[in-house]
Length: 289
Image 1 (cartoon, rainbow, N blue to C red):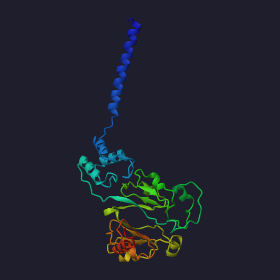
Image 2: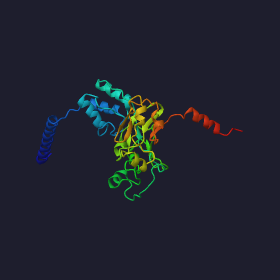
Image 3: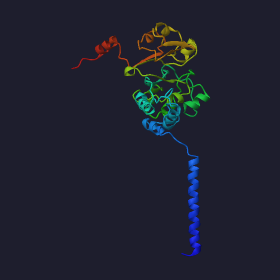
Image 4: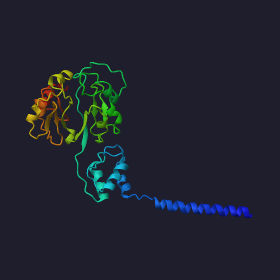
């Protein structure tokens, strides 16, 4: 091997060795330690990355748990109590048991109850429509009907009903991630405690106008009369801004409130029909040949 070539090999080798040493020292200097529990917690999570926990994905949620070494105010709605138990085991902590939640649309302003009085020809999204005008009806609080809540749902848990023009929640699919809650510009969707057989009692109205204007805009609007609050023995109903609200954590599903509501603003879902009604339906059925 000629001397020039030999010198070239030696110089390049020296440069390579020097670069490797420098890179090693820099890596050691700026090395950031990452707790291995972050990977373990992330692996235990459902990888939905829905943001329902309040963090930007499962990785960020895992990092927050490990950094704080606490599960206070931290809960994965998709994984529920089972997943949080696994996370607690990894962290050596105790997980608080929480009741599962499901989304509820607090509007019953169907075409029958809330007739169309205007025609909107703008961009077909609730977010933009809410910024530009009050809606196609006289109710400025009701559903705009463009389905932003359906678009953001990653779990196929909410769909627009073409007949009513309102979104409907599929309870079995809902994981209470809260995406639809954030997407609704009218704040019509809330997360409520899951009751046996997905039974619900809630006020399907967000109209805060006084009785007369509210009823004029929608036949089934809450008028804040307070009759439901009077009959509730569990302090589950409160009246504020001319509007009744039923707290699902306090409600015992006694159903005494719905019959006294003069506008039928209180909705009862997934209950069997009353025995009297069942008997009437049985009598009305034609006899089998």
